Structures are given as C-alpha cells and as structure tokens.
Image (cartoon, rainbow, N blue to C red; front, side, top):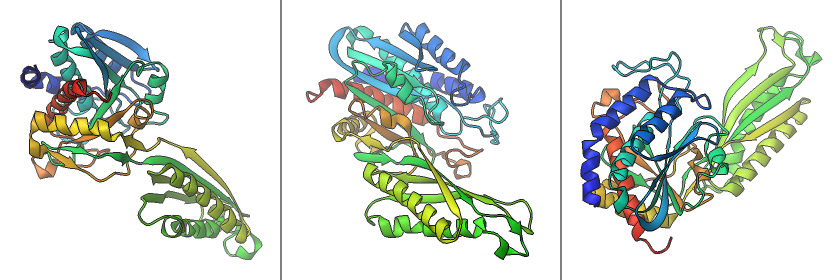
Length: 394
C-alpha cells in the first residue's frame, strides 16, 4: 500500500507545482488570509474530504477517516506570506505588490494537498484518521497555531508532524534532530530618557545617546558572562534611534532588538539581565531606562520517539543515505505549540536550487526553492503515517 501511495504522489507532482505556483502568484499576509484558505478548503472538498473552515480564525482542517481502526495522526502546513516585493524573474512571481511567499509556505500547502489527494484515494484501506492542519499566520506573532489548537484542531490526535523546505540545504535530503530544533524569540525595546540640550552645551543636560550606547555594549555581557558557554543564546540590538538634528542632544533614545534561546530557564535569565543592565547603566549615567520585553514564540521541541518515526520512514521513502542530523537553528517557528500539546516532530526538507545563482535565503526578495522538495515532503509524510500506525508506544 505504501508503494502505491508513493507512485500516486509522483503522478501528482505536476499538480502540486501548479498549486504552488498559483499560491505564489496570489499571496496573502499573515492574519489577512481570505482567498487562500477558501482555495485550500475547496480543493479538499473536491477530493471528498471532510472540511472544517474558520478554525481559530482563518485556519482550515481536513479529516480523512480511514476504513480501519488505528491512530489519529495530524500533519500541518502553513499558508501565509510576507510583506516583501517579489524581485525574482519567474513566470509565477507574485502579482501582489509588496507581498510574497518568501519562505516556502506555498510549497508546504501544495505538498500537503498532494499528500491528501493520494491518501484519500485509498481511504477505505487506511487505518486510523489523518488530520490535515492548514494553518494561517505563522510569520506574525501571536501566530495561528495556538488559536487553532484552542479551537480543537488537535482533539483526539495521537501524533503531529510538520516539515519546512529549506532553500540552503541539500536537495533530496531530510534533516532531523531530537530535542530543541528552533529557538524562542523575545523582542526588546529599551527607551532611554535623559534631558535634552544644545549639542554645544552637553553639561546642561543628560545625554540619552551616550547612556544607550553604554547599555548596548553592556548587553553583550549577558551572553559572554551570564551564560553557560555550552548553551546557545543570542542577544542582538538591531535598531538604535535618537535625535533629529546634529547639534541637539535629544531627550530620548530607543534601542530595539531580539533574544533568541532554546532553554526556557535561560530565556527567563536573559530577560532579567537585559532589564537589570539597562536600568542600572542608565541610572549610573543620570538617565533612566524603560525596558519592554514582549514574548514571541517558544522554542520548538521534537519528541525523540516521534522523530525516530521520521528517520525510519524517510529512509524507507527516499533512501538510507537521505536522512541527515542537523544542529539547532535560531529562526523561530510556531509549530512549537503543537508539540507542547501532543507528541510530535518537525523536520527540514532540503530544497536548494540546482543553479547556485538562484540560491537565496528565506525572507529574501529573490527567494525560490526546488519544487521537488514538495514531493519529498509528501512522500515522507505518507511513510510517517504508515510507520506511526505500526508503533505500539503511541
């Protein structure tokens, strides 16, 4: 049966490409998706799949209920785009100014729809139930996963899986890791307040630019002196704004940045140290600092037993040498919340373009990926489903 599904998926590849390119030409921003979820729901309904619209907001969930008893396995794809102008030269480039699928979510959606069409074709022979989670809003906190979970998309689910194409990783390979795979994110905003004065008379005021500069330098000690060197942590200030004139010391300077970390306890420590350093350095220089730290996504944890299913399944579906272990990465992903509720795993699918001149990072205006990665992801999903049904630990 698994061999039949693999053959069916290969016959559906051209349709996956057509779907992906349609979505690529008609992107919608996070939390503003209207036509995309309707397109997905209509595709699923035409396949004869039970569809639930409006889950958590703009989410779509499909159910393929097999004819035999078994486990309920969920598979997730995201479908939102980014506020980026599509600059690449391709017939399928975005038709929406300032909006682009620059992260591969169109490919995730097309791959999951192809997987759904293949699996529903043998519905009566399937054990258990397949849950197809088409998620909105991944790119923009608060994301879409928590709202969809609250609305019941994981009810009755035994395992949950997701995959992400990666334009920088070798095509034809699947990349896996137990435990932490992607970091958490918190945003930093530090408002340093001093006392404005003429630039020629600095002694008559309190310079917030000087205080903010010392804060920015001191923040480097959070990583270098407050953190175990064997644990990953990034504290970055990406914005520094103060003043409008070259001969005026302003009353205020603003620093903005990000904290990326895996360990939840270290995440808490980093926030505490950033706050303490900013407030005390400012105070020492006669200024004051208001520190605003907003929590973004949690770090993504892969359950080892669930990831072992991916390893076994991927080797069976695409070859023994196709599975590679990978180090954790700092970009964030709201799939993290699914594996906090039920066991599951998230893996990467290599999608590097054959032509090196076309290889660009995610969120780049020239981003594209090798579309065969969609087929590989769908094949691994199918193999994961059958392998999971054979497991006795879930």
